[in-house]
View 1: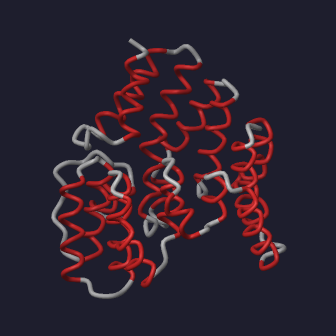
View 2 (view 1 turned 90 degrees about the vertical axis):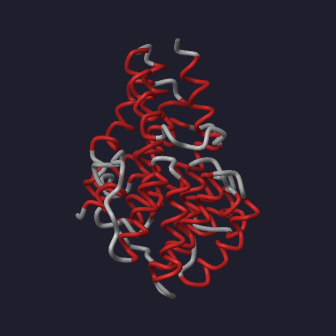
Length: 281
């Protein structure tokens, strides 16, 4: 993995300044790395550069969908829509829908009506089940589908129905594969938080923080899987707080704030994190 890929998807997420890029792909990786630190102005500048040089194709599509997600993270949903459409015309935007659902923004999911896991996370159990049934017909014996992806969908549905224990139970089959399917780890962590099992929740989120590079090198084409990394610090902080370990909770919050030290101050997820941190003092 080169330096920019490592900053965007590997074990160097806080690197700044970022190395120079020499290809459109590397320029996009610079944008992802900058956005991951909340440096949106720098990220937008690199996305502009991709748009000027890469032409139609996979990198151009990634740049368009990344721009749309940056805008949505800034609350500029109307501005994001045209970029969504342009990205979809090239490659679709399921990855953005998943990423937005992860951070609580369901606009893209509701517009697309897919993918199933994002739909489930956004509370539309009926649509998620319909999509899952269609996929089950295509892959009735699929190992990953039956052991990981379908249970993830059903676990997300259970969480939205306030059934966190059922969610944890459903994710048991995903355990052997979870290094490559971080949604399972994230959902399990959320379920433990809902069950007030702070130590267990913190342990789940730490799996993501400690093993970021174990799978992302092969799936960097999904730019916002990186959200799992930053949001896992919040998960560890919340879990530690529930467990009564204020010192660890503060440290996890501080690590998150360091990653996002130049982030736009009005980001809802950052404001919520600061509110929770303040209550620990």
